[in-house]
Image (cartoon, rainbow, N blue to C red):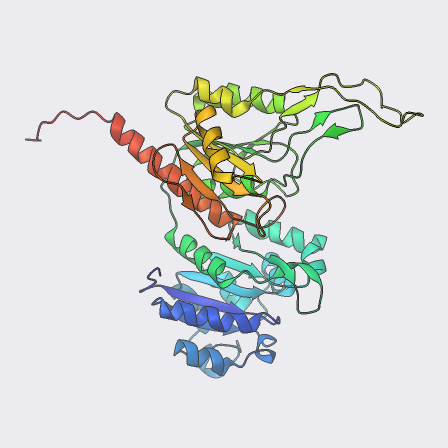
Length: 415
């Protein structure tokens, strides 16, 4: 259990059914040594009484911006200024929209504007509300401002619907809090290339061969590396989400385009992370015109191998670190180890895409980190951002070891 002693956390609780889960979160933070100041919206008090949080934290709970005692002490300013982190869990679609618009019509949103500490938001809402274009735009606005978003997770919702919208689990929330408070800058100035998304291999002017990759894992890596100070370049294939801000982006639709770009950039990079799902095969010849159905009952396609991006870089590498992914369905670790050796990688991230919570498209992943030297490390179910942080922890460790090995040692003491 990580120690949060001397850390002050403002926990904002908004009016959703998941508000009751914030009580367990507050209790866990207190047990880890944090000072927790709870701020509730009026609607949140309809789900959980302020007395519950007061008993768990040993501190008064703030609700009304116009409470005489709070107003006399400028509560929305003083609490915000003392905070090491402002966390809103759960965050409703309404509060997210107000924060994105810069509104401050209650104590919590006023604190958001007054607070200079990192802001971490854990959404929880109906899946259709989460999927609404307005909510997506508000989330993107917040992310562009550097706000961290954790969750929501897929599952059965209180309304009976099944889909994304559940508040992130306690374990994932605590991990995100620790990472945000750590504020790592250990990759400052490191040049990192990340391949993201799925490639598309043309069959004719209309159709193509591709796969189910959403790009979320690659974008999580790019965001985490950016936040840790790295200079990030993305080779972007087809993705289901928007590109993070603050990074260089080059489009690469096919395996050949992605490989060619990677080769051109390789000499300038210190780390390459191959998170893209690159097609292994492509049509040997793409039709110039749309293939018609006609009267045929079958269609035979001849496929040929595509360029193997990581294997090519593995042969050409000098001091660069190469990180690959292995999405497997059987003998996951063993197959990943073989891929690591075959492609001359320094680290491979293996995941069983058949496991619940792993695979393409979701917000979470379950992986095993396999370094070239050392033992594999299996990670539990985590958000993709948390997985990204763990991968980058290993990359940072490897870079430090490599730099230490390359540093000259004279063996002479300083005068």
